[in-house]
Length: 512
Image (cartoon, rainbow, N blue to C red):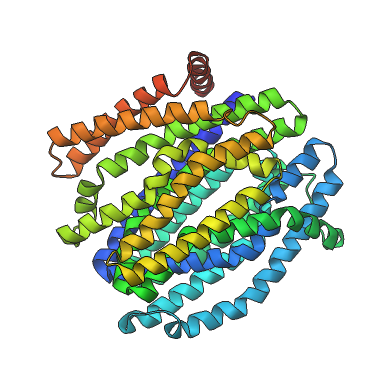
């Protein structure tokens, strides 16, 4: 399959996977809030946050694995690729075994660390243990996914994820339909899906990259140290992300209460899916960017990066802006158990969560540039500094003002907005030894297009009354068409519009 067709296939698979996962979370979140309660719903997100705390230690050597294995395979060094893969896999298995004990202890004594509703304590403890166990299974087997990156077959990875989402939905529907409702069903589905995904990934590693082998004899601490030496900055970056928004639910639980934590968790549910979607779309370009960079063709690398910025921004900005503008009627229909004041609160928190992303969605592929060039130190230190500043400001505001939960959600968003608009494009240009303004043209085009969409969407909302799901869906479709038309003519140059049309025609022609 050619590179152009492969790109379209990867993108289509990722989009479909995202839509299915969004739909599952849409119905699941509503069901949990309406049947079990918004206080309990917040503990699902908090448990996922705790697993991200553990990833701080493992991301040091996992984050760079795909890059190193891919480069070694491209350069015809499969033995070296296998040494990296085997070393990291064995490390992951050992760490998973070690983390099992503290995870169990945390679940047993969690009431001494955070506020837990007494009537739901047993269910929440079982939920956490199952979610942690599912995470440890994924940690021990996630190196199998390297094959998708190395072979540029992210479409297959997305298909497996899609099947996993469907399996998760089936398990939860059966559990909640035929048995007494319990929140720990979410954890049970997590474990089953983790095992199935590991089996699928192992199969495709053998099929797509037959030269890759995981052998105990190939383990070498030297290879782990080499990855850690570069990847340690990914760990620090993970820590900085937690300082910015990874502790928000925990801070809310400790300083404000579990009920408010539930409200923040509801507000972050759809935005989290949207942010994950942006990262997924951005990562579609990562394998090809890595391959081009490894080949040494700098001009082609810059062209691919610029194109990735425009596609990522043009594709993702429409649902982002649409959700911000039509968020209030959406939450009114979605969470019918919430009062009007609670709906307004959730909407404001959602906007604060998405604020830095609305105009910075175009620069997401630039994060790949830092990883590909192995220049992570400076951006990580900047992010870490911003994260520490965020905690300090939030703590001061919680103790000196009545902002409460708005301070938790808002401070990090404002700080992130300055980082992504000013620092990220300049430093990415520095990494590839280009002028500091090299990556600003796509960003500026995107900002102009986004501002225009905000004005148009807001005007449409002011003249159209949304009273049910049909009217909301029709309005979203109408504004979506307008939004993508605006992006098509503002974000892309004439040559890039031709390139997009060629990609679509080739894909449609192949299907026919």
